[in-house]
Length: 238
Image 1 (cartoon, one colour):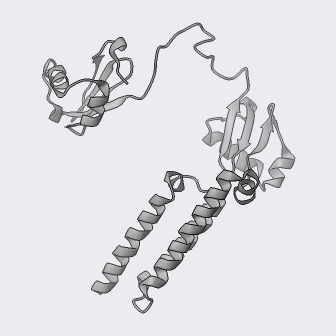
Image 2 (cartoon, rainbow, N blue to C red):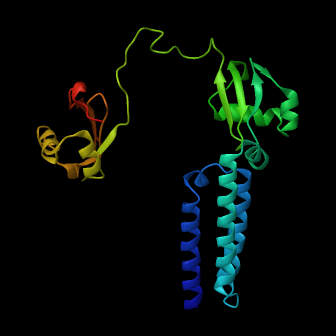
Image 3 (cartoon, helix red, strand yellow):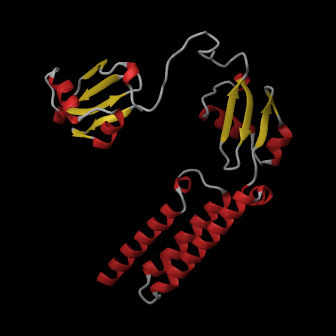
């Protein structure tokens, strides 16, 4: 019994390491060859996990082989576009200038219901609002509005919104995040003083984030929200 437990834990850890080594995209939407490999990996791992009579090496060697094959396919896909199109497919234009391409849908074995579902997932309730839609190689549908339906850009309205970047979490679940605080160019003493002026300590803050306009948002543990200007926008360091 203990042997089964150890084998299961070991194979589970190997599966995690293998999936992590394949890259972050492996955890999101799969390419066809990645999906096939994931299914095979699960099958290869299950046999030595269930049976003590199956040598552990018989499960590890095929996993190593799959990892090498995956690396070779990925490398070849990066170097040769034709090979990538062969193993992964290529994007297909299914709506062009507001008109649905029925032949392309038939070629992709997609029904109109599938297309409408994908458009709803992209945020469009009415297909008439879509000017262009593309079925990506991984099967996801990317949709863009018609020229008259898109929101205006700030440049078209002659508005300068200033620099907008990633807001940094300075406190998370009551714990100061030193790496993020360092990126802002501020010290722990600065943060403690900022909180002290409002009668707070870091332990009472569920989340504190600072955006690139110098605005601080504090969500307190147990409820409560505060927003205020913590830095001059010109002093933003990241």
